[in-house]
Length: 168
Image (cartoon, rainbow, N blue to C red; front, side, top):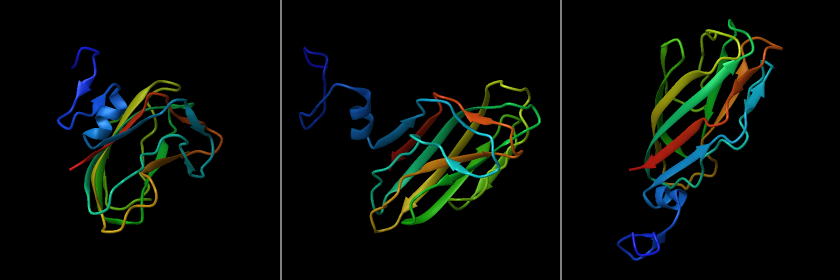
């Protein structure tokens, strides 16, 4: 850091906040700012939880660390990862709160989840994968949709859930 506390990179560009630093290092991220609930069996996008500005012909490692709850212990949260059509390949795996392990190889694939251990108790869901974009610039971001496996029982993705894409 220089005398003002600014981190100066090799080209002389000053970075004064973590978002600019991560972006400069090829890391794109989102942190969910508010709880998002769905009490229907219809998939709904998690507003404010997307990562865009992807580049053409680029490989990304992505990771989602999700804090989730259900209003009923026996009700699980269903999810889908959404992403750009300009994708050559996407592969991922996820592990839910009950340590079940699943894999996927396309955006829009339903991610099942077992019923939660307790009502309104934070539980952890991890999703990690690899995304390779085509030669065309991606026109839509990576995001997440959620819904309840039981109509009228709310499932909630909690504020503070994280998504990161790192460019390689």
